[in-house]
Image 1: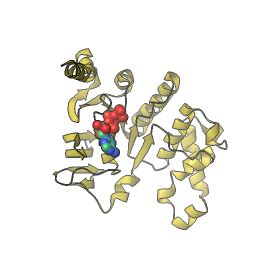
Image 2: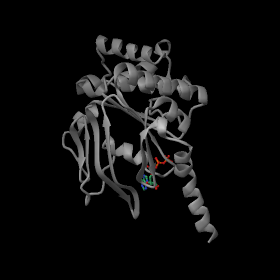
Image 3: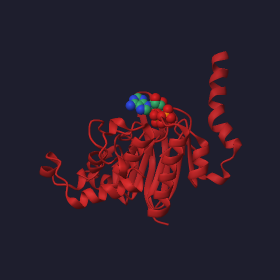
Length: 262
Ligand SMILES: Nc1ncnc2c1ncn2[C@@H]1O[C@H](COP(=O)(O)OP(=O)(O)OP(=O)(O)O)[C@@H](O)[C@H]1O
């Protein structure tokens, strides 16, 4: 098993609020991992550290590696962060597409990192890149929408375009932050099926934050559950049972309710 993501002693404090408490985590190439946990438990914060969007506490001894390259160490981003970012695709709850552009142009944006600056200025993409974009759209079942404006698509369709855009980077890892949170159940199912399929067939490592436990159990073989910034569970989804779920989601409410009643 080859480690593709390594997190050591990740600590993050926002003002006085400790969001992550010395989190340690390793993820192997080809895994599909669900990050679960109640609201505010630190899922998005952890994911954003992996991509270097935010940095850990400077006083800590944290270290994050992606594809064996340092992303950040002790709260400082690596100088060659672009390299680890190049092999990573990102998917967000709000899709982050450009509404006034066509589906095709949005997918081509995924190739910007590997395109010379002067060509990106005039959106001059090669025939090969256009073919690649069409392939990515075919992969997510959206090729027939290629020339439609993104603003005319449903949320589920937009998320599929966002996955195609991520595929343009030829990623080894996809980090998906609540990709189905704003979708209806059928669109959510399709998006999870696509991520699962990409993981299985292309061997792309997928880390996905989810609120719906049933999707995590169905599509991800491994679950990492966070509770108040600590890893509460890390193991097979098969052994993640009702007791774990109750403890993960209910006990904090009970503690808060008891504190409020006192
Ligand atoms: N930019 C920020 N500034 C201040 N506090 C923050 C910031 N981002 C996150 N936090 C705090 O860090 C903690 C973890 O937040 P995070 O968004 O990672 O939780 P989450 O598990 O992803 O929650 P949700 O499922 O609701 O998105 C919370 O207490 C949150 O208020």
